[in-house]
Image (cartoon, rainbow, N blue to C red):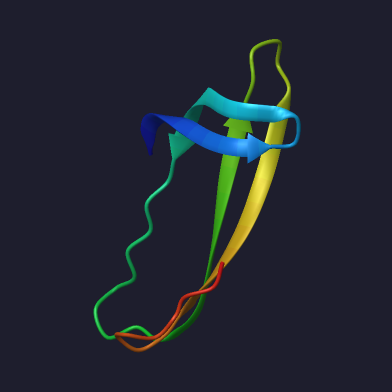
Length: 67
């Protein structure tokens, strides 16, 4: 996980948007192909917790990966 800033242009009525963000990086084990799953727990100020379940499809080198 890394702290970052997310930028978006032409988002709804906003021409430029920049907000704080966290970025998660995924690296599959060597020679792994197939579906892998991970869970991220996000804790907000005030005590609210949110669980994000993400499935990553790992394909051969040069293939497109879909999240």
